[in-house]
Every structure is written in structure tokens, then in C-alpha cells.
Image (cartoon, rainbow, N blue to C red; front, top):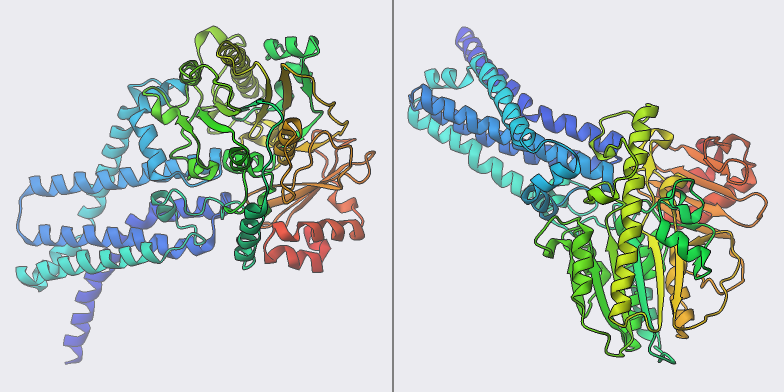
Amino acid sequence: MALDTESLLIKRLSILVPFMAELLLWLLPAAGFLTAYVLQFGGPTESIAPHLELVGSLGAAWLGLRLVLEHSGTGRTPRTVFQLLYSLVLACLLLYYATILVGLDNWGRVATWRLIRVYLDQWRELAAVLDVPVASVPLAFVLLWIAIFFIVRFAQARLPWPRRVATFTRLRMSIVLGFAAIVPFNVLAFEAYAAADRNSGEPVMLSLNPGAGTEATQHSRSEGARELDQLEAQAAAAYKAGTPAEARNVVLVVGDALRAGHMSVLGYARDTTPYLHSLAESGRLTVARRMLSVCAESYCGLMGIARSKFVHEFSRESLTMTQALARSGFRIDLILGGDHTNFYGLADALGSADLYWDGSMSGSYVNDDRAVIERAAALPEWDGRPTYLQFHLMSSHGLGMRHEEYQRFKPARNYYRRISGADDEMLRNLARNYYDDGLLQFDAYVKELLGTLEGLGYLDNALVIITGDHGELLGEHGRFGHAETVYRQVLDVPFLMLRYGYVGQDIAERDYVSQVDIAPTVFEELGLPVPPHWSGVGMHDHARRDYLYFQQGREVGLLDLRDPRHVWKFWVDLGSEAGYAFDTARNAGETDNRIADVPARLHSEWMLKLLPASNTFAQSLLADPLKAN
């Protein structure tokens, strides 16, 4: 009897061990992805279990199908077809993971399926922008598929658990066991997906729900979020709109990844913005010394402009600039390069408009600014109604289409192709050349856009503002792109202002302004009441402020403006517990972290100011400031 029990145990183990080994091999890509997702990009650990359950359920279903196939006595061809399909699913899973990591690296967010689908449809144009041979894209995928196929074939030949099941059970029982793996495990997968909420950060859930986690990825939506929403809704309802004294239009041009430090109009050595520079030399252009983005990526940068709120103050109930202008009788026209419709619910967050158009509606490459110029040219002549026009240009972004006539700085290479190389001076020069070419194109399109609007009458009496949603890193601090950190290069954006047909009040001399100051400045120019609950301060106001705030993911910080001689920039990484402090007057490049020299009292003041922008981890730092050193 004991021998029979031992023999049965051995038989079961001879099936269970290779079965689990194959399931673990299936989960290996997911494990590698989750390691990068959590450790490198700060994904929540709560996402690990639901994602493994989801992917593991899919793997168990395939193994169940393999069991049925093996026991049914089919020949070699059906098995080969099965292995090809099995390998194709794994190849697609790896491609999905790569897409998610690219999105996190460049946008700071999990790529949604709607956004993935857009770029899948335009993969040829995307390959051209990245200077990748078009034929190499499908070839690379096929080679990946073939490599996985041979790995799968090799592994399954050495993990013969289905044949062992077949020797112990009848065909009917094998089919039952196979479907027992397919159906219940996929029910569990569905339950895991349904149970994953926006705060879990489970990537598949975030991919399939464009609005899920959009703002949660930027800041902790604490228990006070509902109260904040109520307060913002009340303030929005209470705002009393005014009537503009005259029909003055507002034109806002936002350059994506528009870094102030690389614009010749702001002192850059290369002539990257000749048109804007000529306006400045003629005295027509008003320039702010330094504008700070509220974050390092598009969604929150645009929301900082629209809502006049810092990231930790965001609420979907906030009164936006366009909503307030609409109450004052303005027509709202949004003509936006890039895909705002499918970009994490950005179109919805921008609010309703009389005209909405973005690059996804162009019929051509989604990030080609030629389509923006063409759509602007299709506007009707101005009918005298005050109009707000917002344009978004992608020429300065790494994924923007570059046209040959604006490629002056060579050799150049799109740094979005990078794998590494931030420490290689040659690669940094290639990246700078590529970026500067984009600025040259941006400048030319601004000139063409304003010329078009002038011809249609929109600039007869108008305020024009040119700014960026965030900056860009071009190898500084060992990084390229944005959406990763809060160093100066990725937060500094321009603020350029033009007046057409009227003479306005002078702008106050302030060394630092923020994106949140744009909306109040517009309202002051129009003579409209500024919503009192906005966080921004109009640039006509000479009053000094003490702090400006910024945040990117788990890095939250402030600029301490209380002493103009020593403007400190401080931030803390809420994940690693690292603190950073730079004396911007002495170290503008932010290369000398002086956190160890900051007095405990000053450090505590900063942490207290950052509490609303952080989670409970920051409160523990407040109790023990030295933890940040």
C-alpha cells in the first residue's frame, strides 16, 4: 500500500513539476517587465499580483489546450501550428511590454490600447520619424517570433507532462482537465482585471481604460480628494463671468517638449528661432525671464495651464480657462497637433469646445504640424466674436515629423531611438542637433500660423502667447526625453507674448513665473475678473510669491523664492527617500546636490510645504528630516 502511494506521488510529481516549469517559463517575460515597471519606473507593488494572475491565467489556458491537443493523437502539423500560435502570443506580449516601457520612458504613463492602435496604424510613418528602415520593422518582429518558436519547441520537447497525463488518464478525462484549465483560469483572469482599480496601477487595466490612473499617476489621490472636488465645484459655480470691453481674441501656441534654454530668442547661441528673435529685436515680443512647468510631461503641463493649478491641486471639477472664457461669450477653438483624443483622456480634460480638431483626424501622420497649419487655414474669417484659439505643435517633440527644409544642424539623430549613450558626447551632439532642427521648424510654423491668422482677421485685436507644456533632457544628468525627473532642463519652458492692435500694461519684473500664471495673465489682459480660486498670479502683479511647486510622478518639489539672492530648488523622491537641494544662483545646471548642507529647520519648512503634494511617506520624512540625506 505504501509503495502504491509513493508510486502515485512520483507520477503526480512527474506531471506537476514540468507543468509548473512551463508555466513559469510563460511568466518569465511578465516577471522581467514587472521588475522594470516597479523598480525603474516606480510602478506600484500592488500591480504585481493582479498582473501575474492575469498573464498566468492566459498561460494556463494555453497549457490546457496543449494537453487536449497532445492527448487527441494529432500529428506533427497541428502541434507545429499550435506552437506557432503559442509563440505568436508570446511575441505580441513582449511587444506590448516594450510599448509600455517606451511609453513610461517618454510620457511617464502606461500606453493605452487606443494610443497603441494609432501608432500601429501609422508604423511606417513612425519608423520614418525614428529613421528606422521600414522593412526592418516587420522583419524584426518575424525574427522575434521565429526565435520564440524554437525556444518553445525546445522547451516543450523537454517538458512532456501532457504525454504523461495521457498515459494515466483517458482522452475524455484529458479533455476535461484541459478545459478545466482554460475556462476557470480565464474567469479568474477576468475577475483580476475587474478587481484592479485605478490606484493598483495594473498595466493591462490602465491600457484598456484611457482615463484610468491619468491623474493618479501624478499624485496621490488621498481621502481629501473628494473634499477638494467639492470645493472646486463650488468655486467654479460661484465664479461670476465678466464682459470684455472689446472683442479681443486670445491665441495660445503650445510647443510640445519646448525647452526654453535651446531657443535663440532666449539667448541660446544657435539661431534656432530666427522669426521669434526678429520679433524680440523689433520690441514687439514680451519675454518672461524664466517659466517653470508644473511637471515634466504633457498631460499635467497642459492641465497646469488650463486650470491654473499645481499638480497636487488638480481636480476634474476645477474651472478651466476655456470654461471661464466661454462664460464670457468667447468662442473656443482647439486645433492640436498630436493625438489628444486617445492620449489618456486629455481631450476630455481640456473640456468642450466649439471646434475641436487634433492630429488623429488629419488623415496623415498624427504628429505632422503641416496638418495643423492646413486646418488653421480652413478656419472661417473672423466674424467679430471674441475667440480663444489654442494650437499644439509637435515639431519640437522627438516623435514630431521633421521636414527636410528645416534640417540645418547635422549630423543629427532622433534620441527616441536610443538604448543608451547619455554619457557619450557624440550621441549627445547628435541629439542636440536633432532637437535644434525641431525648434527651427517650430519657429517657421509659428510664423506661418500667425500669418494665416492675421490674413483671416483673428489678429486685428489679439493677445498671442507662445509657451511649452514641458522641456526636454538631451543627455544632461544621464537622460534623454522627459517624464522622468524634475531637473531644470525638463521644467524650463518659454513664455513669449505678442499684442496685436492694442497696447497693454507692462509685465511685472519677476525672476520666476509658473505655467499656472498664464491663465490669470490672459484674464488681466482681457479686463475680465480672475477666478479667485486659481493658484496663479497674473504677470501684471508686482507682488512676490514665496514658493512655486512642481512634481513628476513620485518626485515632488518646490522653488523657494523668499530670498532672491539664494533661490533654492528642493525636491524629494518619495520612493527612494532621496532628497535634492540646489542653490540655483550658484549652480544653475543642478549638478551639485547640497541637501547635506541644508539646515534642519529649513528642510522641515520645505517638507511641511510639500505635504499636500505627497503621500504618507513624506509625513514620515517630516518627523525625521535626516532620512532624506
